[in-house]
Length: 262
Image (cartoon, rainbow, N blue to C red; front, side):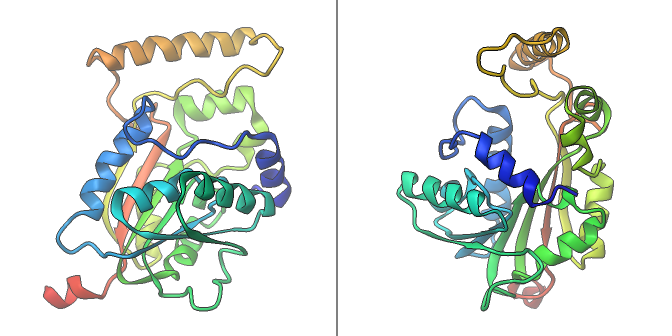
């Protein structure tokens, strides 16, 4: 639903992000770090290798190497996105293999290879979510783990994008956590957990350089600041289907040590 031109324009306009700091100020990163620690540190969790599908300009690959000692790889069909991912790994001093290619055509030797497959904002760009999830699962060895994070594009989050940036909204398939979980089950995976994250969407992007915020964006910015003040004081909105901007699914591919032990 996005297409190569969408991503080439996105990576061309974006500054190179810093490698992710799980202990920084970003609340989403802190929440994900907490959940990943439990998911990847359980007694039957796999070890060694991770691939990020749709790894353009990935901040996550250095994180997974540093926090869990995973050997990291990535695939993306955007040349600019792949170049950015390589530069971020180099900046972090982390080795990794980045391949330009199509999700549905795994590079030679990559099918059924990886212990962990991760995607951050990928499967919601396909009208058939289960087909995209199954394409990612093809990289996963039996017993391996899958991490899938999507923007929900529903409720207040979807409304904000429809009002402020319809081009971005049109490139996404709105999704509930139940729909995300069902897509993983249809792809043959066992869902370990599927949850909404955060209680309210943050501010949609920074102010364009040299330009004033529109009245609508300024209003959204004020609402965002008020919400995060409440969140810091323990009064924030719990994650829910109407206001949460993200859904996370943690799943497992049947087979491997876990099923043998059972």
